[in-house]
Length: 438
Image (cartoon, rainbow, N blue to C red; front, side, top):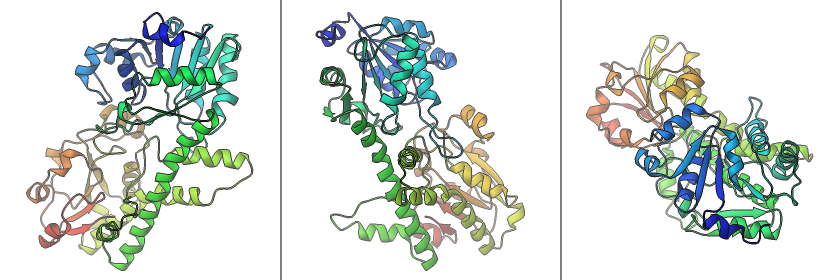
């Protein structure tokens, strides 16, 4: 049944499908469409219409590439019956209590299961804790399809490594971890991904190893950033500039170059909770991982508190202060506002009755409105502020000079919080600014 599967796919006798066309799924669909026939499915009909009209709301590949891509975009799940190689790339967020929210991946499994045909291979890319693919997703596929895994269809796992907004580290340039339920499946999955991943593939020992590898990648980054954030708080109390310390320490060959900051998004700020949740199920309570998460989750509040302290030091009336926040997305040069920690700054400033004015030229405005009830203002409207918080290092903000910055403020002492440290501290302090950064 699978002996010549790869050859049939490359010969375009079989089709490949992508379930979930967000920041991860859509670039994958576009890449594969250059090699094989691709069906791009998403349950969001409005998103599908944007793709059909040649618009890329994620800005990951651009409108021109979407228009040129030979992807059959659809919101009709029955079209999945035409494909036999399926890639599931839906988000895996966490609930308010930080437990895994598997509803999207289970929902995608239900949808695919109802349209699964014999001889298919299903590959999950969603970040999960070890065991989800085999213990949760496969039973759903079997129940909905009436087929038997191993006999009627095969399953693999290949964790996504796409970095939204990053034009250097792309699907094609990042080595791809692949795994399969057996050697036959692994061979096919590896061959298929090698069609589009120039960096090659790494064959994991089994599905659980691949799941675990993905979840620790971001947990490791989270812990390292938490360490930097804790150092920032310590050095702040000492009156030492953290960035200067890190630049000095970074001259050693084996010093890991991480930096303090807000940790949001749907990967680094989420994946550690998947790992610790599974650990709790096994009777182990994480100490290091959860401590790092707590530090990073509190950074928005910490920034807001330091904004208030600097306003007081500048003899500003805190209660009636006007604060501009430049940047709202979870990272630079990306429109994604999901799980942004900038909202924590906004909410904490509200506790002091401080009015926040948010401006972000890259953010998805409608998404921010729906998720957070935040309305943006144009940067040209940022005027007469008591303080400015430069929260995200968008390219548009990196080119701002001191004259541009001066226009944001009212007369008197200017309070500037440069969260990412993208400005020249000495230049602004020489101009009389109250300058603060992590």
